[in-house]
Amino acid sequence: MKRALPLLAVLVGAAGCYDFQTALEQYCEAPCGDGGVETSGFTFTAQPSSLTLARGASAPVVLTLSRTGDFRETVTFALEAPAAGVSALPVSRDANEPAVSLSLVVASDAPLGVVALTVLGQAQSVERRLPISLTIPRLTQTVH
Image (cartoon, one colour):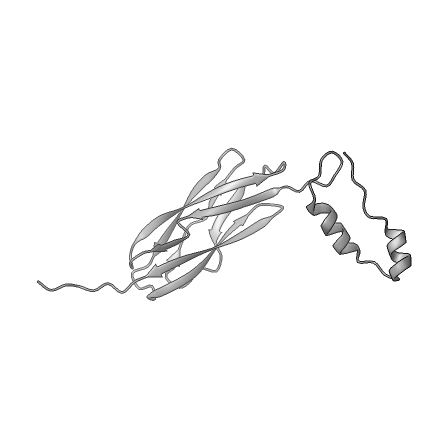
C-alpha cells in the first residue's frame, strides 16, 4: 500500500505557511510498507547497566546489538570521554555478531564515588550513545 505526503497546497493556501519538517517527520514515523521511506541503523543495550568495581578491578559489560532495516556496517564500541581512572579498550563487531564484551578497568588511584559513563556505538553512517553507571566504593578493612 503506497502512502502520499499530505496535500501541501491546501495547507499552504489556508494557513499561509507550512511546516515541511514536521510533515516529513510524521510521514516517516508511520510504517513504510512498499514504497515508503525505510530507516536503518542500530540500537544497543548494556548488561549490567550499573555496576560496582573496586579500585584496581575490571569487569565485562556485555553490549547487545540490534540492527534495523538493511544496516550491516561494523559497529565500534568505546567509552566516550571516560572519567579519570576508568578505561576500556574499544571493540568492534561486524554484521554477523550480535554481542560484544567491553571490559571496564578501574585504576588503583581512581576517585571514589559514582561515575556516569557513556558507551558510544559508532558506525560509518550512524552513532548511538548509552549511559551506564559505575560505583567505585571505599573499601574498609576489618581488624581481627
